[in-house]
Image 1 (tube, rainbow, N blue to C red):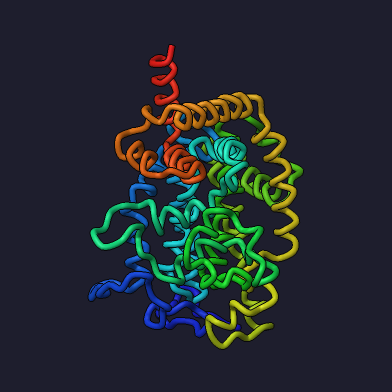
Image 2: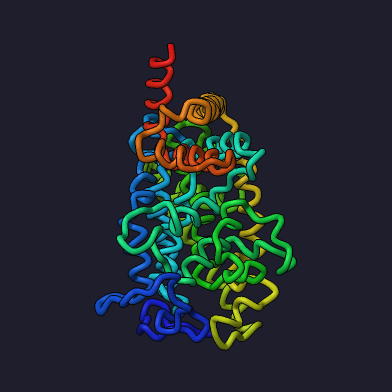
Length: 397
């Protein structure tokens, strides 16, 4: 299967999502005369308060540890760039892929996975906490910006891709017991085809996340001196990139060396994804976007060698970065902060801001009150959570 590549003409692939045939929005709106439905989705995500808060939500390092480490916001922008480039080459809808890339981390708590684990533990008696489900809750309920509806009123295609960009959520289309609480609470969740493959743009966004996550964690880890260039020499994917750069530029300064290594990693992962995706599209020959949903496997994928390399790389990062004592030290503090905030707000809701306190008092069932506290804490940035924790500690002392 041959695509136009750099000479892309704008012709949409038959299996791409088409805004003109979108399944629409929950609430009727007169559509824009200057933007497609998916462009409008993307713009609404960018203008949301949840997206702005990603600026001070951690990726691995907490916000105050350095100005040059990734945050959820910079990571999301990098994912969006990769997703848009891939979608252009593959003749997909660039706006939908970019919207999904920009929205994929909206549901994350402060302090990354450490904060999510702590909040999930605190919420275990009430259905737990899941950042993917929380993202759906944000875009369908919690964003309070528009006069006629809650949420962002995104298209079906955007909601479907957001919920299951990592793959089907159900093996049995009639068994919903395993779904995260926040997804089951969405009254139209059954319409999102949770037992099928996601749309092709969502698949692109998911693997763009993998490309950005692995390569940029190598970048941040090197700059934070959690490991060295020499430590990477024997790793697949990154090791050959290091050798290539050092052979070609033996006197290159460390900062440029790191950048040259990571950009080569990104390029090789992108090339692998394109090659494998073209192979699968040729194999399955989908006629339209709905064929994509019904296939037994995703069409967007890495080749086997890159999949293996990614697994090795993730194991390395887990041991040398995510479990590093500097990261662990902040992880322990972050989990303590989240758990203590949860206990304080649940036991003493007078400490909640007025709008949240009013919502808490209007709910009589414990589970609904607990969800108010969960929503409030999960929306916090790192720095706000830390400052609130310090303030409440002073007021209660």
